[in-house]
Image 1 (cartoon, one colour):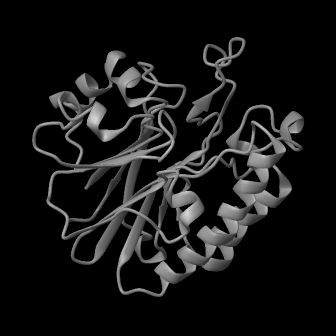
Image 2 (cartoon, rainbow, N blue to C red):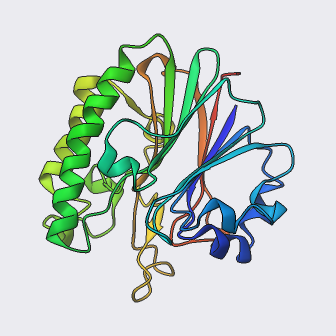
Length: 258
C-alpha cells in the first residue's frame, strides 16, 4: 500500500504547479492533502480536484481561504470521519479520517504557532487535546496511519539550523517533548525514521532567502503509525525534483492492504 501526504499551501496553487499531473503517475492507494485553503464549492466544478479512480473528500475551515484537509482513496472507505472532537480545531478544518476494515488513515493539519504568541498558545491547546485523542485511538482494535503536517521537528537531525531555532515555534522544548511522549511513551511510530535515518531529509523550506536551493529545511510532515505496524513499513521517499508547494510530498509504502 502506497500513501502520499502533502501540505499543498493552497490546493489550487499546487494544481497550477503540476501536482495533479505528477499524482496521476504515482499509483498511490491513498493521498492526504493539507492546507487546501479552499471551500469545496470552489473546487467541485473542476475534475482535477477529484482525480479519476479515487473516492475524494474535503473538510473545509469555516474561515475562507484558511487551513482545510482532503483525502483520496482508491478503495471506498467504510466510514468517513470529519472531526476529532475539539470544536476549536474542528472548525479550522484540520482532521479527516477514512475507516476501512482494520485500518484508518487520517489527513491531519496541526496548527502552526509561528505567527504570534496567541497562535502558539492555540497550538499548545491542540497538542493537549489531540494527545488525548491519540491515546483514545490507541485503545481501539484498529491500526492508524496519521499523515500530514504536524508542524514540529522532532530532533536535531530533522532541521538544518537547529541551534538557532530552539526558541522558535516548531522546535520548542515543549513541542519536542510532546513528540517524545507520542513516540516513546504512547508508542506510535515515526514511519519515515523506521526506514530512513539519513541527515538532510526535509519536507518544508522557508520561502525566504535560498532555503530551498541550499536545502535549509525542516522535517515537519509525518506518517505517524500505530505500533502494530512496525515491520510493515517498506520504504519512504521525499519528492523534491519538482516543487508544488513550500512542502514536498512524502510517500511511504507499507506491507498492508485494505
